[in-house]
Length: 456
Image 1 (cartoon, helix red, strand yellow):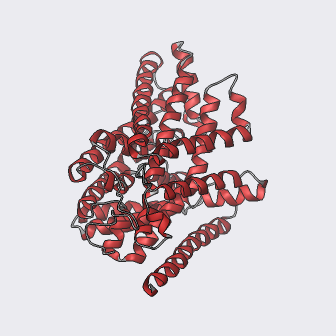
Image 2 (cartoon, helix red, strand yellow):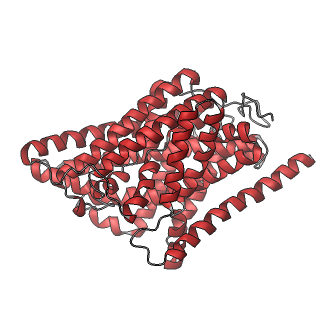
Image 3 (cartoon, one colour):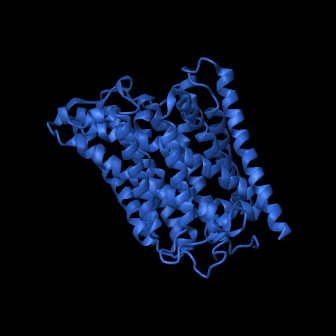
């Protein structure tokens, strides 16, 4: 297949094509569901009011350039495949495959850890008689598997159905942001703020590592670009959706972080159960004991939407590589009835489920898995070097420069050990070896498939 502007949309071995089912509302809510991660709110609030400044800086120097890049590149390279398509067209097939491989593995590692987090947080927030289940490993695994497969399953049977999972998640994020903002205003008017509002971020090793998390939390627009082949009138729809979603994500993170700081002191906020804590605090202050379960359910709905959005979008990467015969041909086919890349979706679900179950067997396996989780930010950010490189080639040089700067800063910060790390050399070695192993595995798969393609 040529690497021209049409990109991989015709499916190898089939006359079927992906269906354009997403309008402006659907694309906007899809992007919001992919960006918003409620797990980052307690972590930001625990770092203090300086996190608000970091959110705003990330929005200006990362999210805005990313929105410009995604909108520009989707027009330049219409079709399904997003970053794979862009990188392949601008830097060649090997770089396109490496970009896809790094991002896909990063998301596969993200899924089980995120699922366990959200299930534990939601169960704890529901209070008695459910709170004790937050420590029940069997329950958490079963609930996490159910959440993953419900989200992926709705997208498996078609974007027409699956988009409602993402729409629900995006709408839940809107509702959660408005609820926490409103509660914070009422508590502030009666009792004032619980925490001092110092806008300067803390400058220590723990905070430096957290800067990468802030930038990672603001990523997600690139996932909407992966759905370019299924968006109606993408040249007009995607840029508008990107700007709306970017603005909402910034406001959401700023408002919800401030809301937690108004109702709780930073040192008392748990990164795992911070949303449950703020629900309890608001319930005590306002006499509304129904608040914690409502906050928990909204956070869960947002999480399921995020699972569906990430799963649906990321599955288009192996689909596009399959069309180019860089993966087995089955990855490049769509289901004859549902019109979705079903093999890619099922593969992602199977890998995520395996990692989720594997992390439960023995402390050694769990420790190894946690080492993989520490690679998530690095694997997630390396593809942005390609994305902003393509933006540079498309003439968006200011956006590319800003995006590159934040990407490099995030990569450096993610490699900085936190105060809890006692053996720095081991921490750095694991990151280096893990990253190089992923890159080497990409080269082995690419070389084998590309050699067979040339021979054929």
